[in-house]
Image (cartoon, rainbow, N blue to C red; front, side, top):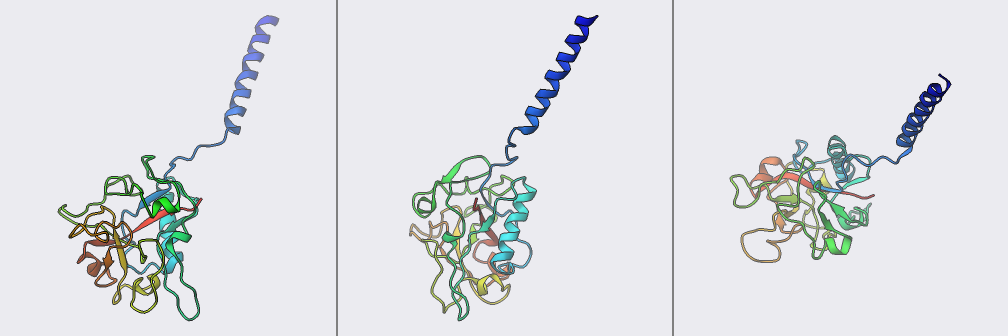
Length: 222
């Protein structure tokens, strides 16, 4: 009987230690995604309530996908005003690397992101892992709002390029990129993921006229 009790106690102790070990193991994030294209617009076109609102929207979508809490930033630039300096999209998204929901690394650092990256229609997926339709599909949604130059910087003040620094949903204009890297011709702008052309307005209906739905690129800054 004594021997049996020793076996039972030893077995219970091993089980308890195993549970403690499991509890102290660092948890692996449910979703290692650090880049995505928003699956939808919150409803006001290019008006996100400024950069803070756009960032919050990226964070909310990431959280629903199990990838929240990583300092998510919308890839948006803002132009300078009399009271505030310009903000460059490239300066606010962290150092990289960035990968989509499938684990495909699209760029290792900021320079590669603005050079030979792997962004394209089949890799620039939403937070749900969906492919956004592009040129040649029944509905073209390849315009992604950025307000940026090809180098990821703000444009000079003057002509609106950010829909009033992302606070307008009517008149105005914003620079967009093509997530599918396809345009009307073979020019660099047509194939640019972040700086292809200006929109015809800032509302959802106006954004649709050039092939967009008010979508954003979101990057995890940490």
